[in-house]
Image (tube, rainbow, N blue to C red):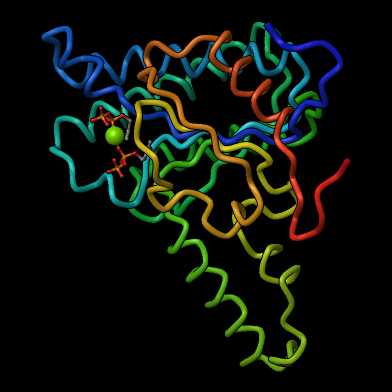
Amino acid sequence: MLDKGIVLPAHIAIIMDGNGRWAKQRGLARTEGHKRGAEVFRNICTYASRIGIKHMTFYAFSTENWKRSETEVTALMNLFRNYLFEMEEREAENESGGYCIHFLGAREGLPSDLVKLMDQAEARSANKTHMHVNIAVNYGGRAEIVHAAKLLGEQIKAGTLQPQDITEESISALLYTANQPDPDLIIRPSGEQRLSNFLIWQAAYAEFYYDDVLWPDFTPDDLDRAINAFARRDRRFGGVQQQ
Ligand code: IPE
Ligand code: IPE
Ligand code: MG
């Protein structure tokens, strides 16, 4: 349960980790863990929207996850494709949760039919305001910064930008998360305590919350616990402790 009267984080980012271990514990194929993980993603999305979180970001597939077996990568892409189809159907039935969907990451390298579905989902949901849902697919924090640096380089080459005019804001505006607040709270289940190339620029002042629960077992109660812990933190942003 959420503690009474707390201020909710505006933006929560989650590293959905532990699907493989969850499956292994049950003697199942890793892909079964991903399947369950995808259901948990849907539940947590619905719950976050219900309690009034305005921005959620989910790490679904990193630029490093291509190292996995073809079977596993294909299974992950299929789950993603299913979700995109489901979104389309729900909208057709007018049951949409009202999310504004946004995909973080490089489109290059993803199957072209998937890219088309992603573009369509973004376009269809662009005017929805209830909650922003970012899904990081083929996402790497370093790749994101390299991408932004290339865009800046092009502007300089074209003479539309002077190097001395580059600011933190101008870099933020060229990231996949442009126009969205930085995450206040980053949650990583499964006992791992690292960022794994997730939102490395945007995480500058995020609060981190680690949990031993594996993602396929993650519940709304676990999210509540993370939010309660976040609300007790004293965020100083380099300043002095508030009394
Ligand atoms: C997270 O679960 C899903 C992705 C990275 C796509 P993992 O597949 O990393 O699960 P573990 O870490 O092997 O348990
Ligand atoms: C991070 O998890 C990526 C996603 C959850 C999509 P990984 O399982 O790939 O991270 P490492 O390899 O343990 O650092
Ligand atoms: Mg993992």
